[in-house]
Amino acid sequence: MTKRDKPIIAIDGPSGAGKSTISQRVAIALDFVFLDTGAMYRCVGLRAMRKGIDPQDETAMRKVLKGLTIDFVRDATGHQRVRCNNEDVTAAIREYPISQAASKASGVPVVRKKLVALQRKMGGLGGVVIEGRDIGTNVFPDAEVKVFLTASAEERAKRRQEQLAATGKTVSYDTILAGQHERDKRDMERPLNPLTQAKDATVVDSSAMTADQVVARIVSLAREV
Ligand code: DC
Image (tube, rainbow, N blue to C red; front, top):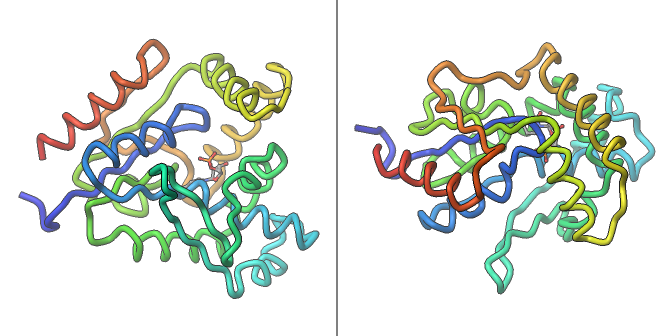
């Protein structure tokens, strides 16, 4: 028995494990809202870069957070778009340097405090698939379904390269693997809400699974509750 009418499905895991694609598809299958918390850290990283602010400078980051608004909207094709202060930043936040800026910004206490509060407000009623790094451990430790979605480092880098190639960007596999390693390390070693697996999470290793299989597995976990 859950205290919410509809459950919260928390999907955590390292970058490149396929969380966004999978979470979006699970949300569509269940007719739930999809909340991409990584996109929120990316909005903050993008704003910092544009203002020429070091994303790790806590005092300066207060300026970046001031007046920040983030909205998720579905376009006519059902895909989710990210709006930051009324500007569509869906493509801009996926740029390679923004990934690094977002990772750096995400270790800053004032940034996490603001975004975690926003996430609790946006997802607290349930009926939501929410993906990130600390959802099952920190944002919603009482989530009804917790999944830790992972894949081997090589598979994740390969997928990221294909994703970038699909948008016309050529980045070498070695550069992606090195950048991913740097981000994984920073995400797992930061003192505040690091990426860790919740004790009660179900681990799904997608290295040798198709997206359809992963979606089906998570939908069946959701139907059990
Ligand atoms: O999932 P992503 O690659 O879009 O996330 C971008 C960065 O944000 C990533 O380096 C880790 C950080 N992040 C976080 O610290 N906590 C979350 N809940 C989600 C993302």
